[in-house]
Amino acid sequence: MSDDAPPKLRRGWTTGACATAAVKAGLQILWGGAVQSEVTITLPKGETPVFVLASVAQGDGWAEVGIEKDAGDDPDVTHGAIIKARVCASIGGVVFRAGDGVGIVTKPGLPIGVGEPAINPVPRAMMDEVVAEMASEYGQMPDVEITVSVVNGAEIAKKTWNPRLGIEGGLSILGTTGVVRPFSCSAWIASIHRGIDVARAVGLTQVAGCTGATSERVVQNLLGLPDYGMLDMGDFAGGLLKYLSRHPVEKITIGGGIGKMTKLAQGARDLHSKRSQVDFVALNEWVEADISSSNTALEAVTTAPELAQRVAIEALAQVKLILKDAPVQPSIVIIDRAGTVLAKAGL
Image 1: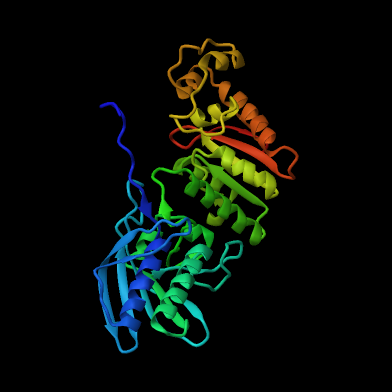
Image 2: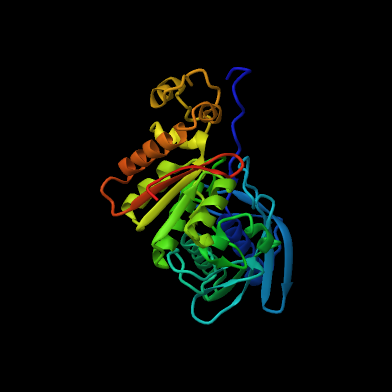
């Protein structure tokens, strides 16, 4: 590796993996009477991470362990959060409860039913397996009530998609592999997909995906959509529209600033500055004025205001290409940095 090579990013562990580790350590205390300083679990793909216990509490018939989430080098809002699991006896198998800081599902369309703790299927399966493993080791029945909580989880959840998805009161316990891969786009795109699932399940006929907070505010006010009708698209126009083509909602509005919407109009599917650029020479063919030397799309539209409407029309055409023959009616809204609508198409 050369001296100029970027450092390898460190992976982390999901909230589901942390909760599973807390359950295992709790059962070691409850059934084995031993408090360890660390605990090892096996993840779905066979990895065996070691977790240091951050807190331990116990009482008559129960034990509770906290694990500090390490998200590695991923900018995860739950990095450093304490994930706790309290275990005690239940009647008839494993029962999951939401403690402080863990949300409750209130809308259909998610992989967990309405009224259930927001603990996703894979973490539940991981905890089920740990209960079975520990019950066999200690000669106990695998009848355990597991209450998962997250310290300050309700506040952290305000920085996530949970309020829009109808998960109230806290965070979700997530993870499909147990591993957080730094700066992965997959988690964001998965959240977009779940947003579409919820919108369909509650019967929304119109949703919107926007590139940022300003365009989201403008489009939401323009269309009068509820929060759960706003899909946090960001740069992932392709990820949103491809999923929507297979899971249609009657109407979709794509909103954003002139720069990112110009990229979409020119065929980009990922609108991030590192992964797509505006082609100003090609853009020059859409207007009469010479904008080929422009540094930004905003500068170009200042020189040639009619460009905004052409970009809206071309972006709409690109959206239709991605949607193919899906029964979805698309529209486009383009704004400037102040939130002024520069152009619309399909509305």
